[in-house]
Length: 633
Image (cartoon, rainbow, N blue to C red):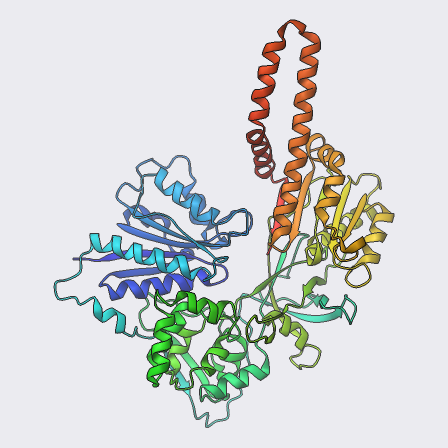
């Protein structure tokens, strides 16, 4: 029997590719022969001829498919496609997302519905992997993958001599054949080359903008892009865009990792070839040849948190029986609570784990199976190219934390990267690429806007203000700027009210019409004040802007409670005003129709019962019109 299926992944950060490759290798163990393909290389005309197709994809922006998938998605949206186009195709969809976003797995949901509408038959339920789960996306990925395998085995039964128990003890082949020059007799000097997807910006300014004694270190970063020409076209950006920064691992931890595994910094990797090109793609974000040192410093995410598969695979490479038993338990279904306590809660990284299993003997080629590549980190750009055509500004919070049990002090990878420029000689080159976000200023500067950006969430609104300043200074009529309300929040007026002079100057110049700042730790009697309280105080003004003047409402910042609380405040404003308008209409009707009191009272009760639905419909209309926009992380 020809046991084939196609797995299509759509990725921007690389996670979908990792998941799809792991799924492909798992299917091979069950005698299924998948064809793995990047959606960029997929011929859309093949889709109706697929017997079984599996999609693995994330959601980007405001519920959109990843950029590489947009050509296929636009093709699928063609209205003239017959409703039986995929009549002979069974499909499965695994979405990778984060439930703290309102558009959680929207891309997967839309794709699932569209494939059904043109005749496709779902093999099983849609998978919705959630990065907010205690075990991250692994929890749903593992669960859904097993369900998929069970469904596929009803279509492609196992051969009679197949022993399913062998799978538990079977070590997959490594993904790559790797050629290494361990001698380097000619003393070749290999210079690290930044991946072709990135521009080489130069760090120009790295200034702390919170006071030195304050608990949180926030940096104002300026990157010089005047000489960024690597991609044949000059780098360009707009207000609201996002800069993706590719960080490097700390030198001290790089040397520790190399020594831990018995490697040598000057070994040279000359080639990396997939063993099975049907189920493995060549590594991205990597240019060859490369030294072991640069591979560990610039490619492997050794400071990241290991996923479940890491523990499963590592169990094959320890020689101590007790260590092996512990790793096997961590990778088992029964051991997930213990793994969560040991790994996710304690924020262990790859180096931490490897040090705690000293009997490890890892074949070098398996490092690419064990440790994923460093992912670029996104930052909202806090400048406008109209005022700053040769620089990009970022507002970066240095992420530090203490682990809950061992009480170890830690700093995030990109935070360490920016901090290292103070004492690390890397020629201050920062690899970046620019991506459009869903947040844009209205096409007309006369349309009013409401901006809510506590903490580093102010970055995107700083870029908006700079753009408005440019238009004000270069306009024939300086009075054509619409109202702009800005709600900023921080902990203390004297400690972390960054960009204060700039924001207050913008208020004086009329770039913004209202500035409200909430200080959560400066309140009387220890009472905390948050931005949503100021928003509720401006209920009438906000309703006028949203309802009567077709204004825009933006939220930017951490994806914790703040966006939900601010949204709820807006919903409360909408509800109270819709009720007020409804009551006014009923009063007018009563005055004009004194003989119909009973009917009016009944209508009033019906409207109040349906008010929540009316509010939700009103809010959904704002989202559809892209007048309510969130940028959270």
